[in-house]
Amino acid sequence: MSETYLTTSNLLGLAGDLLTAGTQVIAPAQDAEPLVGPPQSGPRVAYRVIRKPEEMALEAGMPANSLKEFFLPSTEPLLKWRYQKNDVELKEVETTFQPRVVLGARPCDSAALEILDRVMGWDYRDELWFGRREATTVVNLACPGEDDLCFCTTVGSGPDSVRGADMLLVPSGDGYFVEVLTPKGEALVTAHRERFSQVEKGRAEAEQFRKEAKAKVDRNLNASPERIAGWLAGHFEHPFWDKLALQCHGCGACAAVCPTCHCFDIVDEPEGVLGGTRRRNWDTCQTSKFTVHASGHNPRTNQNVRFRQRIMHKFFIYPERFEQVLCTGCGRCARVCPGGMDLLDVLAELEELAGTEATPSKGAA
Image: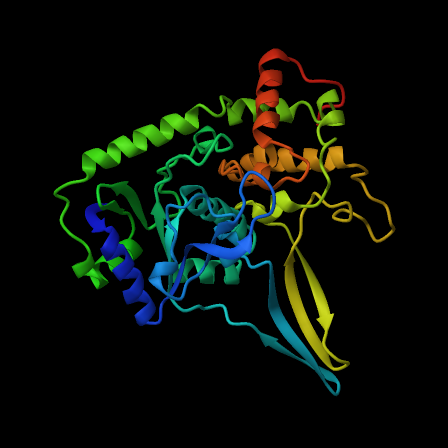
């Protein structure tokens, strides 16, 4: 790992250099579309492909979406088919991509990429996912701590986490203290050496920024994912689940903005009578049709058990298989929930149960 410094003007210049060279740049930017309802109003900040450096809004708050959609799009073709007399012609999609750079990624979003690498390369290597991962250089921006819904430090991350990132920018003075973390990061600095300067200042300010951000997030939730996982392992049937999702609408908004939710469906969509496209679309365990069998039977009959699946998957099932909590503590699910459900409240209650109930309940899984 090496260190350098990048002024705000040179960061804009770096974005301009990349765009001029034809490199796609993804960054937090203000959307014209208003974010309806509390706690925000007016223009929202979202990750999107920018056309000019001035569109970036790196320190304007948490992007409403996560980076997930740039690596696992909400819908994408997997192949096309066309009938040819007695044969079927298959046309596969490209699995290699042009280089691109994410500038100003939140640490909770880059961490999600590393977490999802486990499942995407588990029993089958997802060529589209890893093709995009290999083509992308991720430059993190340390977070000051968004609000009282963040809890990244509880799930093993932090507002200055470098998981899944190639570089880290920490606000300091009139620019950013820079940690170069990977060969991709080194290549970016080498290619734009004139934009970076020697570290002669900024380290102390950067350390203070990191310390204050961590302290701010630490106050939001005091819970142990390991202790919660232990309680979940022995309490599949518990009165807690009977009241869990009384506010849940089953809309799936939480999964849409979550950086780690990755469930998808695959459908064949006819295009005329002679062909069509096999397409992958986002799906979520929070909708009532997610587990409906062809017979019409649904083993998850109500929203309480569907929400139980969400909690179990993130804090017990995924950690048991991949040794990673399937959550980065970004708090987006609580921000967008129309029913006002707050994952921090759920985890706080599970932490309390884990500390007071020493023996498994009847019907434990």
